[in-house]
Image 1 (cartoon, rainbow, N blue to C red):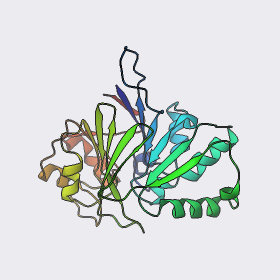
Image 2: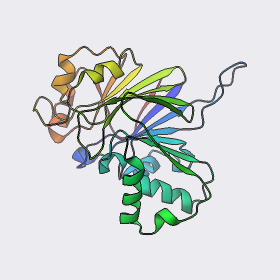
Image 3: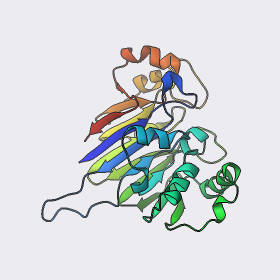
Length: 253
């Protein structure tokens, strides 16, 4: 069983009063004899700048997050990482934290930490922070999660990723931010859940998905939940045939 909590599902600008991207995946610990070993702990899909507040509002402990999978290096998707790391430092965290992101993540994270909290990259901590860079077309396994990556169409100073996570028996696909590309269909093929950007209803905005893009293409995922909605899309979300996210939405799969 996998519990998916949309701690933050908004766009970069807080449309609708929503927190930035922060999706919490918590695998349930198997109890039956012969069940596979438990995963390392909850993981996040993206960690926007507002993520600590979003997690705490949902009653989710940032200190037990085992890994963060970052779709791309814009502040509303990775800007919460310095705060997550420093929170672990001040709360005496000891469990390791893995950051998985596109090429360039390690350098960009270090630069962000030094910009926000000078000297913070040089501090010795009780827990290990490992940064693993995942290129489009590659696969890696972290914290018991297998992550596959496709290239998104969304410039961010580094390759942006469309992700497919295999968490136990459950498959979750995530578009991050991207213009329509066949990779959306490939990454979400027969997934249990596709978490898809729907920035506007039908207005073409460079490097972003519209709801119209999803409606015009065959999506084989068993369930689709729309995120990263602008004010335009929020005003029309009741017209969508797919589910729409809200901060605090919990899905059990």
